[in-house]
Length: 479
Image (cartoon, rainbow, N blue to C red):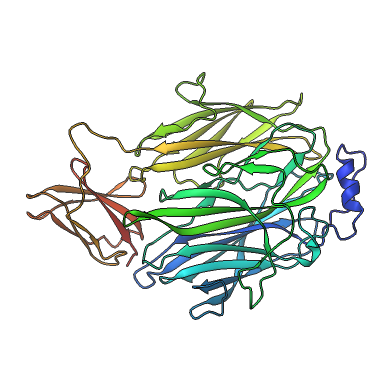
C-alpha cells in the first residue's frame, strides 16, 4: 500500500494527504479498458480477439491473474440470450512507471487476451473490479463504488469491425501550480472510421436490474477539457484539492453504411489521475517537422499524407527544469500498423509511419510522449499529431463504382465481384499493408473470381484495376 513516503520529497503535501487515510489505497486497480479485433476464420467467421488491460498499483499485494469478461448480446447483461461470461487469464504484464523509492505512483499494465464469438448483434463487453480506493476527490463514497468498464460493438448488419486502440498508456500526474499541460486519450482506428471523443461520468456497481452500471456522483474530470476531434487533453483551472481523481474517457466510432453515418462501436477507459503541489515541471513539445525539413513547424497542424508513402517526422521537446533529461517514446506498441519510433537523444526523436497502400482515406492520429527523469515523480507531456490521409486523384481518371460488390462478405473460400467496363482487365490484389498477394485478370464482362492461396492469413485485402479507379474491399475469414 502506498501509505509511507519520504517527507523530504518535494511531494510531501501529497504524501501527507495519502497517509491521512488508512484506506486511501484500498484498491489495486488504477484503471482499465477493453478493445477488440476481428479474427474470423473459415470455421469461426464471427471470432474476435478481445483484449482487457488493467492498470495495477504495485504498492498493493492484491493481484489479478484472471479477470471476468462479460458479453451481453443486445443488452449489457451476460445472462441475455446468447450472452456469455468467461475467465480470461493474464497474458503479459508491463512496468509503466519509473522505479524510484519515493515515487507515489508505481504501477504496471496487465493484459488479458481471449478469443470470443460475436455473431451479428449489438454487443456489450464489460469487466468490473471491486471497490475503488477511498477518498477519490471526484467520486462520492468512492470506497463503495466498483470500477465498471464497457466496450460496444454493433455488427448487427453483418459488418466486420476492429475497435480503436488508445495511443498512450500512462497515468497522469498534475502539478496544480503549473500552467497548461497536454495529454491525450487519442486512439488509432485501422479501418479509417470516424472517432469522437468525450469525457463521461465513471460507471460503477452493475446490478441485475441495472446491468449497464450506475453513474457515480461527482464532477467529471474537473481539471481537463478534451478536443472532440483529436482526443487531446488540455488542463484547465480545477479544484486545488490535492489527491486522487478519476477520469473516464469514451471514444465513439462511426462508419458510413449504405450512404449514412452509423455508430458501430465505442471504447471507454477509466483511469486514475493525481493532483499534487510539486515543483517539477512537465516537458514541452516545441516542434513537429518533416524529417526532410527539420526546421519547419507543423506543431498543431493537420499533416496531409498519401496511402503507400512513408511519413517521417522529427519531434523536438524540452524540459523547463535545468539538468533533467528526456526520454521520448511513440504510440503504444501495436496501436499504429507500420509505425516506428526512434529516440535520438537530446530531446529529439524520429516518428516514421509507413502508410499502408490500401489504407482508407480519413483522419488518423499519431502521438508521442516526452518523460523527464525526476525521480520523486517523473512528469510527462504528450503531443498529438493529426494526419489526413487522402487518395491521390489523377487528372485523367475518376473513381468508378463497381458493377457488382464483393460477395460473400466475409468469405472463406471464394469471393466474386465485377468491375465496370467491358473487356479483359488486369487486377492486382494487395493486403492491408499494400503488399501484392495476387495478380489476376477479369473475364470479358469485368467479373472476377478469387480464391486465396492456402498460405494467406485471414484479413482485409483490396483488388484494384490497372488505373486504380475501381477498388473492391475483400474481407477474408481464412480457411
